[in-house]
Length: 533
Image (cartoon, rainbow, N blue to C red; front, side, top):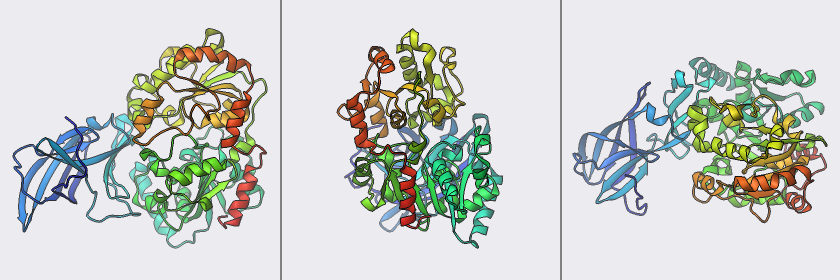
């Protein structure tokens, strides 16, 4: 049974912890390690165990050796692979000491040596039948995490070898390239692609865009720009990744090679102080507060090479400086380049349903999407829309959820769209229904009405962790707020038939200041000023 422990109590377990062996096979993770304790306890009793999230695993004491005033404990434990499949993507490994009905816990260090940039990884175990990869990894704070995620192409031994060779060759080359990318280097429809084309138009020769060759819209890209597009996963991709001086992307740096890549050479580059990274944002991030513990990977101190962040207003800039340790000089208040090309048809007539993704449901979605609270909420929203508007509905699961869906109810399946670009679909959106996705800013900019569905808002904020809240509230929200399906039924017709209300436009303009289609031009001037291009 899990219970809280007093973090202020002194724990007799020393933080020094050494893994002597880490083995992963198709059945279990097996770890042999050593920790040190001030006083010897009765090791025959179950006073120690391992905790992964709130799941408890028996720790077997092999032997204890007295070393002056402390004892060295040799231990081992096993975690069945089947237990991990429903966990979160990243799972903290803790050593727990139980005495007198009190629990003391410490995160298990990965290594005796704390590494900030050259992070270590265990062997990657690929569960092919489930398209899943599992491995142990070292965090920047030297903590041990078990990662359970969809299999990456870069998990394969051949790709790991290509990356290593590219890294070695890059050591003899100068860093002078500018690399642009969007989500997982698979998309060409956001701010990075707009900026890329503008830079090519202005005569830049050392600018390159990473894109998956299977992108369905690749044939639509002008030949002028295709010459500087590099196919994802090629040797050239890896070599240019390592030789890049500046990277500009709509997502964090790992998206430039492979999301959640498990490769120490790639992570060394991503965490390099020499790298100049400009974060374009995939959408306006004035949504889930950056004060949340689960949003810390956006903080400046977690991104060594991050130099600048593109934002849409002073209000959004304050969000980064107040909660994510940025300074005013780090902010480019110029607006997102993708808004310069946002279009909306005057006869737009679609109703798009798109809640944001839920990382805590990611692995559950891969096993049974229809059993997730995420899907059940979408279904309630769908059923709340009057029958007269049903033929106008498009359901857009978030990209990080859409890619792993394996099962969908037949009554909703025909309304889901997995193939078209979001940009093309938003041109036709009269109404967007979302919870707290940044796509709301994109749709409203074009002219769509927004309905915010907050039935599970408090539950979701709890899942994100202590300190999490929405930056939007009932006083600054730029659309109707609904907490029940019945409320959606009440406001859908008004939103479908009327134009945007002035009070919502005024609220929106405080968060997104620019609407002159010159965001890209302003951004390039900033990049030139700071000699990042």
